[in-house]
Length: 321
Image (tube, rainbow, N blue to C red; front, side, top):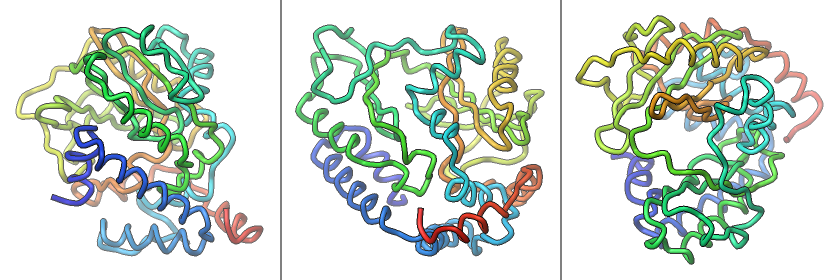
């Protein structure tokens, strides 16, 4: 089991509060250290991890694979629009403009600090997360059993970290941190993640049984199971998954939301036949999710129209973000 898998299984699920707090403190220290890096140091740090993951150097000068292009894009191509859409609060207005508010998960509250949350006014089950990061979700299934002092410290630490410096996803840098509380939609939630390239959805992965026997299937836009995977630690389901009746509507939503972007992932949920918007993802898995087999990394990289001159222009004007 890798360190990342161990942390995900034993720490970030809130089952070990003291270890979780220690882990968050370490991550904050790493982020503060990373914020002082130059572009050369950032490329070196990403490059070392990339070589360990993929077994080859990252080609910053002429990126060819899908994952290589994610790294160049996340470091050198942030924009105010990307920042707006990465913000889980600000994106809601944009989604309403594009497809309507009926696809948004209702809000129970948005707060500037954990102390502002009125727990007495909340239902027995809900979800807490931050708007400016990834991985800060807390699923509350029984309000009477929550450890408020632990959650207070957890979210104080989450709110202190500028998530851009956790993995150099620079479109997160200018998001004002907030805490979101949403209704708990249950465990039977399937994720439908549409990867869109050159303004069109090209493949979709769906996660099944996330909390029991996590499997992932990858489909094309005709719901045909694909001969590759998007995570070396996951397998296909052992059973045939019929195309949901709502697939056509989900595909149309992805087609609408991806317009204007050379690459983006549109994440949707399907709960009791209702489609909910999840998030807009510009650097899925932070560029560290291999295709299995590897050739598909090059296949989808070739579909992504990419102007790498942006990197040269940025480096000519500044040595650090």
